[in-house]
Length: 461
Image (cartoon, rainbow, N blue to C red; front, side, top):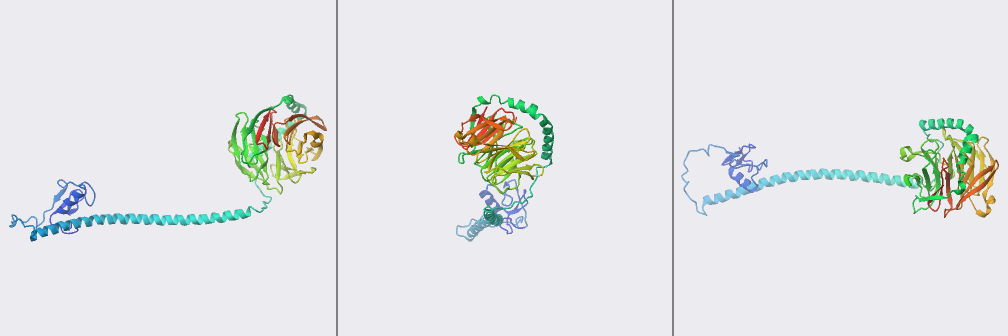
């Protein structure tokens, strides 16, 4: 039976009623006095009077009489020295026990610290490896980004749901188009009877000021109050003319936008850019993301337009060609040739079979989609030499197909169909302070929107 403090056979043994440990009474009382009455083994509160039980041994229970009980030793006597040595021994035992406790605690802390150090070394090694891999990839991308990459002829489709919507709308519009010339066209043209009195009603600056300039504009046919603008800042801004606030921003191109266009039947925007790409962007729920990248063209895509029924879209590039693409197969179905300068603008008439194109030299051409030929040509610089119109940056038919807005220089010219082979200027708008880059009639002919390199979007009605 050994003392839990000294590890020696106790002279006056006591046992803790709480823990069952045996102690030398003398050592235990000293320890309790120094450590707030706490058990040295379990650290529980220990009352010396109630929680300790003295153990009776043969030596301590002997009935022999201590003949020296009344003897008082002198200070330098052997009994006094033995008592002093005993006290010192007790102190050493108490200190040794405390040191053992501290040593065990230090060992545990050291073990925990070593585990943490090992884990940290592993994490640092993994992060260094990932960092080296990322640096290598960035180097490869930077090197590859300086070269043209052949994207091939294989690319995605729009999905069965969108194609089904487009086909259904095509059939619906094909039936209605038979009555367009006699009924719908004249009724829509009547909406612009007060065009001569139109003026600017609002002006907005939506794009970044550090890269000034708005390059294109489009109005949603399904939601006529929603206007999209593309800028030099590579972004497309979605603006609500009723709420007079910005409702969305599209990103994805690497260079400035050249054209933006809403699809007439589904929530999709078509954008073209000087990065030589055409993108379709999905606007489902007004949450905007990139839906599909079309084939990378060999020339800078300058503009793109959807046909009113949504079944085809036209693109024009720096190559002076106008190309028609089928939405269901994303294949080139016809190419128009005839411009002598790069084509900058396209517009489909609501009658479904006329296409207008404008070029850098100020020439406006009208095409018959049924015959794939040009049936009318107008050189605006010769027709209006005093205006010095220059390049045709954008064009837009109204809902009747009887009016055509042309953006160039710092003005907007609205032409009306005077006869089958003759168009004339009926309204001129000159509120912009820089070149007008975009023009669009609202589907319901309620207003006209224009954009310019002066960073502004202007609304006329």
